[in-house]
Image 1 (cartoon, rainbow, N blue to C red):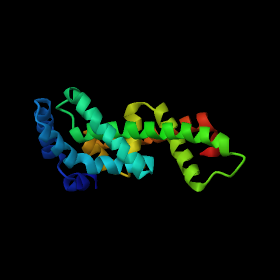
Image 2 (cartoon, rainbow, N blue to C red; image 1 turned 30 degrees about the horizontal axis):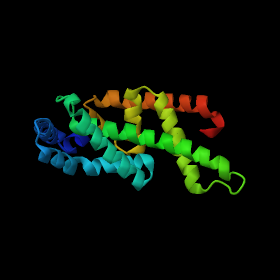
Image 3 (cartoon, rainbow, N blue to C red; image 1 turned 60 degrees about the horizontal axis):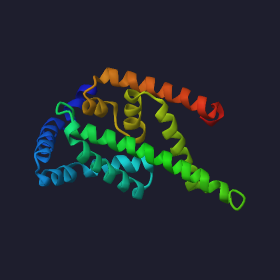
Image 4 (cartoon, one colour; image 1 turned 45 degrees about the vertical axis):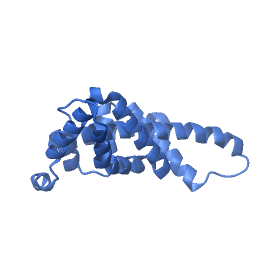
Length: 195
């Protein structure tokens, strides 16, 4: 089955080489190349940010900041790495940071209103996302990134393996390890009754 999924998966190789060429043109001063990069990858970046933050406005802010970072750090882009994977890693990290900031603001605001009303379902969901972000921060990057791609972005193990260039079996093993590490980190932070 993994072989069939790999055969049916879109070939990102052509898109990656095109994106690498666009980055090269942008570094050389071609501003139109950056506009093409944005047009080509903005949809995937926004979908990733929305899945993680659960908030379209926050997701738009995350994607905008991600492209600002691409501009600032274009020279650091490693040409042998998928541009899409590099961009989405930036988006994931910024989205997790946004969740963490929202948690701090929600807890500060919650102190003022705690006596006035109970926490709404929206705030509860936001709190859960913020807790997830904190626990994800505890994980090593190689596990965190795969877990975010699988559990928050809903990608298949085959798709993750294809995008990251990691062997399918290794991807599945790392996902298993990541889930165990996440569970253990959650219990350390919040206790077993919260899992």
